[in-house]
Amino acid sequence: MQKNWQIKDSNPQLQVALSDSLSIHPIVAQLLINRGLTDIKEAQAFLKADLSSLHNPFLLKNMDVAVQRIRRAQAAGERVLVVGDYDVDGVTSSVLLNNVFNQLGMKVFHYIPHRIYHGYGLNQEVVEFARQKEVRLLIAIDCGINAYQEVQLLHSAGVDTIIIDHHEPDGQLPAAVAIINPKQKDCPYPFKHLASVGLAVKLTQAILGKLNNDILDLAAIGTITDIVPLQGENRILVKSGLTQLANTTNQGLVALLETAKIKGKKITPFHVGFILGPRINAAGRMDTAMKSLDLFLSQDPKEVFNLAKALERHNTERQRMQRDITDEAMAIVEENINFNEQKVIVLSKQGWHKGVLGIVASKITEKYYRPTIIISVNEDGIGTASCRSIEGFHLYNALATCAQYLEKFGGHEGAAGLTIRQENIDPFRHLINKIAYDMLQAKKLIPTLHIDCEIPLSSVTTELADTVEAMGPFGEGNPAPTFCSRQVTVKTPAKILGRDTIKFWVTDGLVTISAIGFGLARHSGAIFSGAKIDLAYQITFDDWGKEPMPQLRLKDIHSN
View (cartoon, helix red, strand yellow):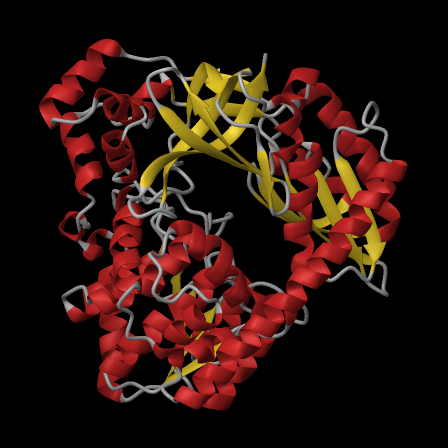
């Protein structure tokens, strides 16, 4: 599907001011402007991204109360239970808390709910587990902000609760001893977008009075995979954490890098998001996330190796299941969906594995560029769904309008989850498509590619590639800059590499440079010697030769 290109407006005057003040390339100055960094000090801090710029952890509301309660538990020899979520953020957060409590000489237990049997967050089983282990302090990490009833039950059982969570509070807060969440009311913390693993870093910093670099590798992994904005403190933690990852002392992480075949490579957010993260998540999707937790906590080389291999097997199984369900879902779309009538794809089937529904919904949305809801119905007629949206369709608001047909739902603009009875699926499908009919005009059903700058191809130099790379790490909230160059000449015909990838050379008469397009082989017919084309791309390095050379990583091609 051809994309609409939307090029951001340039600001030549501010561009010159930033370029001169910071001694940076004018194009990089424009990239800073595009990211809202127009103040010289803010832009300087962004480019520096130094650990010394992290905020005082005691600016977080209730941090002092949480530290006092933990110190009291340490002095009294109380047992502590850490309850984390089953995703990467929850697992890495749990590991960080385990390490700091061990340093304090405290006895720590862990509990991670089972995705299929327990669902998300605190539950009755947690209360029973706390009773069995005779704990007096429970730390809920990456969950708990809306667990009002469960915290009451824990209190009745004589267990104090500290909640460390980055999710949005939904109404009445639980009666916990302390809640650490920068999104709660009256919290003065300057940066509101830390993942839970970032909040765990702040807690360890507050307890120990310093920041240990050896926790930053897991902090980077949790932050990247939770898709929080890579801005402010998140970007600082990730930038330092990726450096630490290359020298990690965590045996489980070393084993994971080895089994994933990326040990010794320069690790980027891509490696974390698409190689490490899915393997850590696979345990929670296919079995229990306790395997991932045990991997990072174990000091036994044999156990670590076996656990890393188990995650590899789970990930392979997850990939196979994901492919099968995606193929099945796409076949249903092709056979049954009339896109003139249905702007939201709602698919349901009994027995689809709940652990991969979100990935399948993302794949369907990506292919057809329609909001997608994938529902797995169990034997009792209860459907569990993952939902993904597109630009211009606020998913959470749409679901709220359909609440009469839903048992429960939650999420945000771009992604959500819901529970629905089987008999309500058809009326829900009808209503949400009625909403979409009013919200999504035809032009909104064509994907938009946001482009930072239009530049001549000759601007793509090693110097520019270096300075653009320094703006990383890239990810959510700090996307890799996208450029476009028009009317460039194809120097060599396109070669098709692997699955759906093309590579060729282009020139503007001043420079000749290679271009690679993953998933763009459909354009190969228009890529022949002498052809004039417009390219949208990110600037990367091709490191196959003796010296890395700038390369265009194509995002889209418009042929003339």
